[in-house]
Image 1 (cartoon, rainbow, N blue to C red):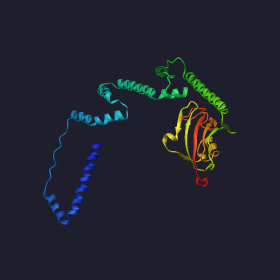
Image 2 (image 1 turned 30 degrees about the vertical axis):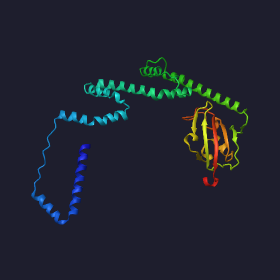
Image 3 (image 1 turned 180 degrees about the horizontal axis):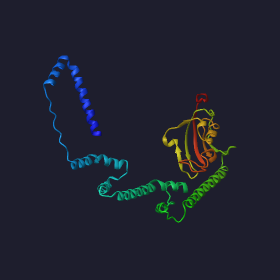
Image 4 (image 1 turned 135 degrees about the vertical axis):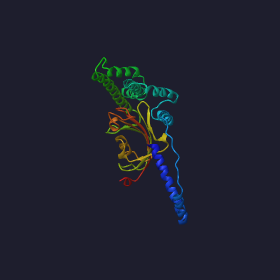
Length: 307
């Protein structure tokens, strides 16, 4: 169908071009052309049929480079292993429907195993320990559990298995909650640290003397955020560009700090989880995480401008 469409479009383009040329040439040329058409008989060249075998092979070869691009870009096949795809294509034509179903099912297992290696095991490690690159989750045992569960041969039920996994997730959350609570208790006793009624802690590094923002004031800041283990999760310094937003657009700990500290202040904030991302955290923030920010208030704008 595509070849046919291309030919139709090409013929249409030729027709338009010919009509345009005739229009430009004037009436006398048009009359001459019409006379020629009437007196000249065109005999189209005969198109010979192609043997079915020759056509079948040719259409395959013609599509092969597009297929190669698809395999590499969409299917993730390494170009060094294209020969195995080629082998499968040849063998599939000789297989019975039953054999083909078996091979397809096997290939699906390989794809899932690869997905486990590349993505899933990291996600489970992150949820179970807080570190995606740990070896806590054993890949072979994970795949064995999936395999035996599919076949109904597992040594425990699916419900019992999930309870085991959930126990580890809960242990990790409780561990995080205790570590972060202990950090805040200890940090509150550090020199220069102030604690507000909400639980926000901060230490002034440079005292500003400018305007204090209202909820709707645009504020320009530089900042760097890290966890209590020192992991940096966000930094305007690294991006080389300050951020601008209003205090009512950010987490509660930031809202309080920005509406308390004046322009020109450089401070370190210690924000408990209930003023940040809560018991669940988010993609980059663990559950119950205390967030530590270096905050530099560069400019406080007009509060009326943000309304």
